[in-house]
Image (tube, rainbow, N blue to C red; front, top):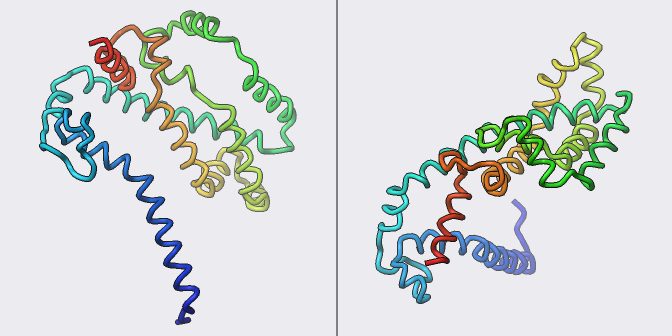
Length: 240
C-alpha cells in the first residue's frame, strides 16, 4: 500500500470538508421538509424548527390520510407514471434505434421533421381540439398518449446507439442470421442499460410532476393526478 504524503493528506482533508458542506446544502432542505412535517405548524412558521422536530405531532399525516382526494391522486399519479414511462421508453427506443442507422433511407429527412416539431407546434387550442376529436378528453389515456414521446430524448438515445454500441457486434449478429428486432432485444438493449435508465428517470419525473395536462384535459376529479390535487389545496389555503 502506497502511503500518502503530508500534502496529499491535507488536500484530501480539504476536499472532504468541501464535499461534506456541499452534501449538507443539498440534503438539508429534504431533511427540513421531513422534520417540519412532524412539527407544530406554528413553530415552523415562527422559524423555530432547525435540526429536530418542535412539539412533535402526527396531525398533518392524519389529515392527509383522511382526505380521499389525496389518496386518489397518489393512485392516479402512480398509474400515470408507471404506464406512461413504459410507453415513453418503448417509443423512444423503437424510434431512436432505426434512426441511428445511416444506411436507413430517409433517416435524415425523418430527423429533420422531428427536429422541426421542437421549434414549431400547433399550439394549445389545436392540440385540445385534436384530443377532443380522438375522444381522449377526461380519460385515463389522455395523460399518457398526449405526451407519448419526446423528440429531445429520441435524439439523445439515437446518439447513444450510434456512438455507444459497437457496429461490429451488430454486424456479427446479422452474419449469424439475427433479425433487426432480435438484435435490438438481445444485444442492443442489454448494452444500453445506462441510457434506458436515464430515459426512465426523465420520463418518470415528468409524469410525476405533471399537472398542466390534467388541468386542461381532465374534468373528473377522480382522475386528477396528485399535483393537481395539491394545487387545489394550495389555492384554497391562499384564499382562506
